[in-house]
Image (cartoon, rainbow, N blue to C red):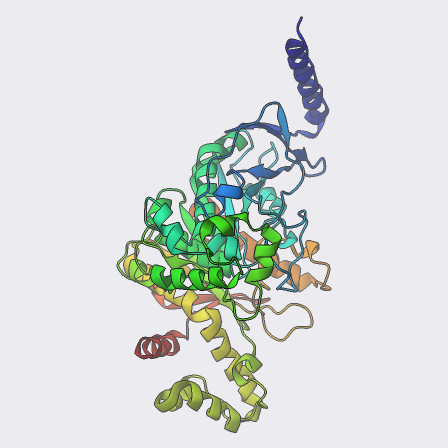
Length: 524
């Protein structure tokens, strides 16, 4: 008997022993065969939830693959360990609310993580592991396209898995690594495109999910994509991209939408200026840029005056401006659930160093809106100094991100032919004034216990169970409504759901404001 055959017998013996050890807890095997080879994750004995972390969905985008569309991952022999998160994408520490369980940043970052429900049926769900009928959530992290990671505790998939849903978090390239456009890169491309590599990474992950999720018991026809902030903008971009058609059946956008983007020419000009300023001598071309160590490139991208690299209308991933795609009804025709928070922006973002008085507030509006300032004041009124902070918070939030979220929903409702639902998240974290940007994530995904920074109350946990219940229902059926939850009317009725300790449906109340802001954007 040769050593290879002996190794195979030993592997079968280990697998048999593992199955015997797991059986008393009703746990399925922690080994799964995916494209490329076999992976081995871990199982939680208390819950039966299996997790598979650091699973490659694309080849490492390094060397000549820097600023190339993602390539299929190489296969491997034997069993690949999938117990630890892969490295997070190259990024600087720009946001204080991010905590990572992954290793240090690395250009080799294209990994995803999968949480799988236990073998036994989960209450309220017909899904069981091992049957390719389990609904799937694929979540894209936020962070302005410059930071974030699928290992962040607020995105953990175990709580959704306990509700009978396979949960997947996806890494994608960020900043200069994910969104640099350049004339040379466009010439390299058979599509004449460059700059949207991070979005292409997400698309490659969705293809991986389509092709592999059945091995985990997932239904490739029941995939919902979701994300917050830049993750929600990513959701809207995937909905707009022809290359993502058929890869998902529903979408959730939390506080964000990509309605506007630079042209390819504008993005190429910005990329050329960056390349010229890196200090590569007389030939600041892509070949030279690809030879720069990743840490040096990251440092150069963070210098004063260098803009954040963001998605562009490249003519391929995005063939037209996103708002035009949505307005023409050419986006993915799937149910959409989206909303924003009561304090996405702060009042002093708008007011700067001025004190919150009506006089100062009106002066700011005059500077921003000129002859239209009085009309803006009418829709964002402050009858006295004590009302300025609330009015300025509302306007700041809308200018930052709430308006675009609503506009996505409005265009989808007008042209999409699929049901849409709109929410306003109003529950402040303990000690906070208003529901800040990104504060709903741990509520929606059931991860309050993983955020130790706040003294969560029973009311917070009740709000989380409710919001997660709505999300789980939507992921299963395309409709957030279900037993035990207040009725959530469709956006087409002119109503939204305000999510708080007392959750209630009410008139949306913002259409006149937003239609004014959209008109003013178009005029300026």
